[in-house]
Image 1 (cartoon, helix red, strand yellow):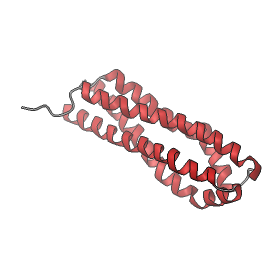
Image 2 (cartoon, one colour; image 1 turned 90 degrees about the horizontal axis):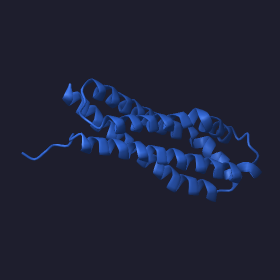
Image 3 (cartoon, one colour; image 1 turned 45 degrees about the horizontal axis):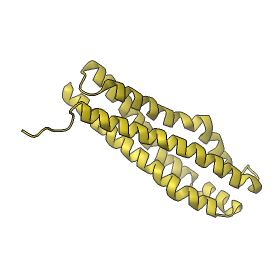
Image 4 (tube, helix red, strand yellow; image 1 turned 45 degrees about the vertical axis):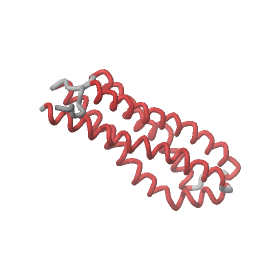
Length: 160
């Protein structure tokens, strides 16, 4: 059971790191690109790529949260890591997921459908970016907490 708990904690850390990295890249690369476009061009770009973004980010964030919740569960059954850190990490990973129905689902749909007026695009993109960076910091925090839990729980191989 300890091996399973360790393995899932490591997988959760990897998934959280990938998810956090993808969120940082989206905020640092895509958002400035979107903001550089004229509103009509942005809406056309978003309409064309919205499904790809969802197909990329949804499984990554769901996997990261799911593995973190599994790591917490296994850790309760067989303590091998800093449980409090794993619990907080799971909370943050779930908060990253919760941001989607709370804000991103409706806003992303309005971008994809082009139902917002072009004059509102800069303001809506600015708001989107604020929400995104908040979600990104939650994701980075979840990754860091799980990484620290691994180190504190001595999940890393020790020299003989």
